[in-house]
Amino acid sequence: MEDQTESREVSASAPFHERFSRQYPAIMHAMVVSAFVVPLALLPYLVARRQINKLHRTITQLERKTFVLQSALDLTADSNNITRGEVKRLHDLTRNSMEVAASLRKEIVQQKADRRKTDETINNNLRMLLAQSQHMRFVEHFCSRVH
Image (cartoon, rainbow, N blue to C red; front, side, top):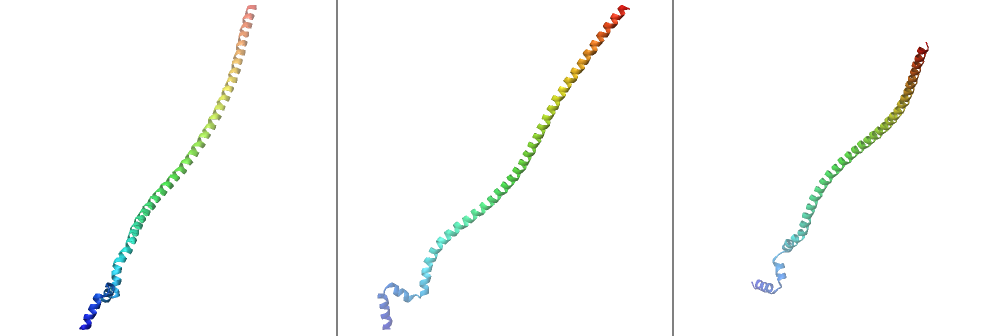
């Protein structure tokens, strides 16, 4: 019993860490250290994990929006191509219409010139006929007076 009392006295006078290591095994030391170190080590991981999850959600939303914008851009490009085709077709129709109008104007000018010539010819012929008619009346009138 004296040995136990002595060991208790030695133990009481020994430093705390020696008494603690004799009373508790190494596994207990590891558990106590782990109880403090693991949460400290996990804290940055959890914060980073939370931010990564938030970034992942943001990326997913941006991918969706990018897909919608790409679809809208494709639709706009298709519409633009259709509009370009229509503008080109209208431009060609306008050019053709202007060419037809120009040729019709030339025809009208030519027809007016031809009509003027024809009218002049008819007027000249009518004058000649009038002159001949007057000459014939004069001759008849003169002949009737002579007879």
